[in-house]
Image (cartoon, rainbow, N blue to C red):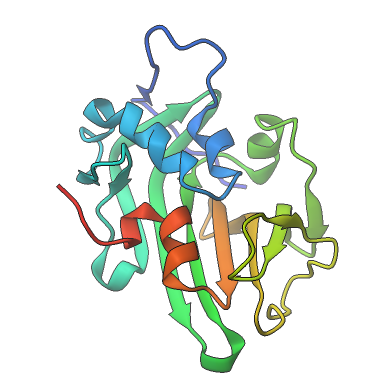
Length: 201
């Protein structure tokens, strides 16, 4: 893999917080906790790219047009031993196959380096992609359950919603993403993606 020279690294830290999850660790839950972490560090990350916040302590990067594409940072963001150069979002409505939403960080490091920085994660490999923390629920369910039947390339069963963390390489960069897909309604989506719930300040 091509190596990247990183002359400047923007490091995030929160004074007084001990053993707090990093942005990468919080992203793996595929819920609103990642956006809470961004809110705690909003004064710093707004120097990297435009951000918005809501009244519930969530912050997110202002997405590209139609919520598809990459927000590139003004300089690399250091997260532990990793260097993130952007934030990626994508969404698709495939009709009967369900709705698909992706969000996460783009790293200059190799997938192996990203996995080494997240040693607590149990990754599953399918060809060139890795996945972790696969969960499933029905829209009316209160709790998520471990998805023992998760498989790449297969659409969720009708009437179910799946979420999973994904790790892959694209154009020489490593993407650490979350995906929520299937019969995704506004209530479930808003609980995971506050950036798509509407009201900002």
